Image (cartoon, rainbow, N blue to C red):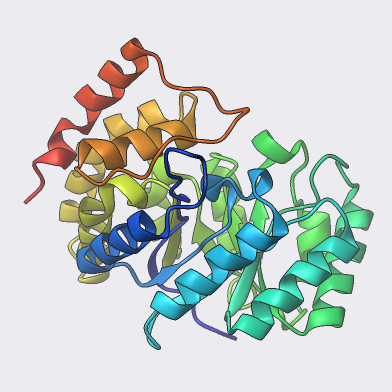
Length: 294
């Protein structure tokens, strides 16, 4: 089983003034994140507005990130689609590009049953022989990848982890204890990431890393070094900004946070709307400790 570790940003996708993917800005963004200490890359997830891009654009983004990545950096491609056939096609393209794994939520819009979830992921892994990190985000997908499905998938050698984004710590504890050595717990509830670490999450697929990479990586490094008090201190410093992120317009705020750091990545595509001046002011205030992070 591939070991997942460190902070892997769930990448935003930069767009230019005409709405096209801005690869110059993308390269600058990736370089900034690498300098902060990230361990890998997760393009074309929900933070990357994958559902608002064409197949051709998603492939361009995946290729760009793959070409930028170092051999030591983990590559996990977002490969979601509304159908099992569509997911399989996306996964096979990512595999051909050289990605190590894919991040997959349940097919959107369908709200599948647990039995359908089992059938779907079993079909995907059988058809692609690709490592899969499950993505459980019931607040967005309308259904949880529950214990019934996880029990059935835990011994599938291609199911290597689960990004748990329910925001419920008890769920993270349940996964960590129930599937120890079988499914890796990946932190996906950013505002309780410190707690996830205590329960064995060695990796963090982190949207906020786009605009607060240095403190996030410092927190991960402190915890790994055994300095849990320092990791908690950092969590306390970045928690206000994470809390504002979780209050709505998540992707818009990630991009605005990049702008605040002198790292503009453009606006979001419709139907995402712009931040109001009050929303900008609230997030900018919460970001102050991060903007001056040493």
